[in-house]
Every structure is written in structure tokens, then in C-alpha cells.
Length: 102
Image (cartoon, rainbow, N blue to C red; front, side, top):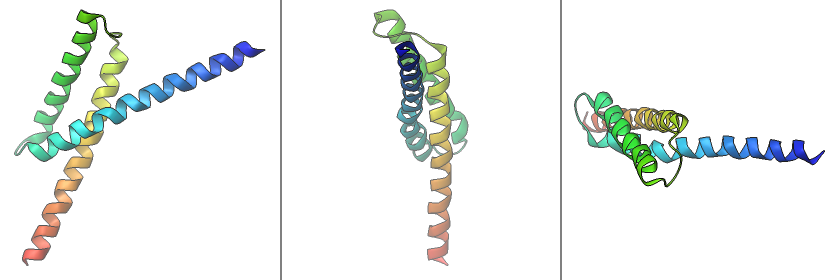
């Protein structure tokens, strides 16, 4: 009877953990999009890829956590969401600047 409740809680925690992983990498994508100029999409995605790879390799080498490909994917999803928000923000800022200057 209680086994089902315990498993349901466990699934909720796993889902919450994945959501938190995505949330933690949104700022990286956002601020990278604000930082880089020119062809920023490639640079931001490459930055997210490198940071994620370093984190996952450190977990593997130092045995501080689990090396999971799921974490890698969720980190990159968070990075791309942050990139999208950053590109939108940059577009709105430039639009307002152009509107003020006219």
C-alpha cells in the first residue's frame, strides 16, 4: 500500500530535479547571449557545451556525483532557453534604443 506512495514521491522528486537542472543553466545562456556579439548563437551553445562537459567530467573523475547523459541534455536545454530569452531581450533593448533615437 505505501510502496506506491513512496514511488510516486520519488518520481516527483526526479521530475523536480530535472526542472532545477534546466533552471540552473538558463542564466548561462542569457548572460552569454548578452556578452557575445556577432554570431552569438554558436558561441553561446558552444559555451554551454563546454561548461556542461567540464561539470560532467569533474563528476566522473572526482566521483562527486553521477555522470548522466540526461543531465547533459537538460543543461543544454536550459542553455538554449536562456539564449532565446537573451536574444529576445537584446532585440527589445535595441528596438527601444532605436525608438528613442528617432
